[in-house]
Length: 163
Image (cartoon, rainbow, N blue to C red):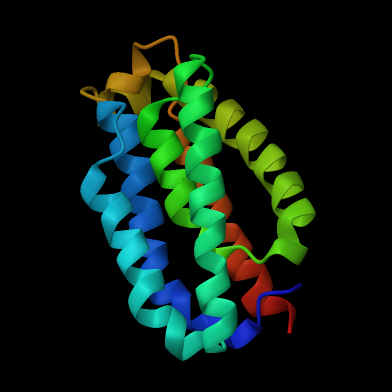
């Protein structure tokens, strides 16, 4: 893994609650709040210089720009929601370029697991009664914030625990 374990440990206490917030918000409202996106960028901005060498931290900002442009194009084509694109861009600086293949596999697995879990949960009357006002229960589209937030959280945990 290209991300140092010490950096993953430094990011985790701040990024984890934001990832959980994004997953919950997308399931409840089918929206990822801009405040969550800004908060994640702020975590990288503030914690990053302490967790990474300054030159590596500076270069990681290019990931945000590239993913933001790709997300904008996918959103314009109707293939991705705007909130999903913004959150993916905010998460991109946390991922080292050398880890991109691992993160792509992790994202694919997380999407499949999140989709199956969400669809299974919404088919259970007890779960529906527990949170009856979640918009994702009645919408045809899938709350990708569940998978995107889960992917960043799992990536940071994986890096932190592998070393």
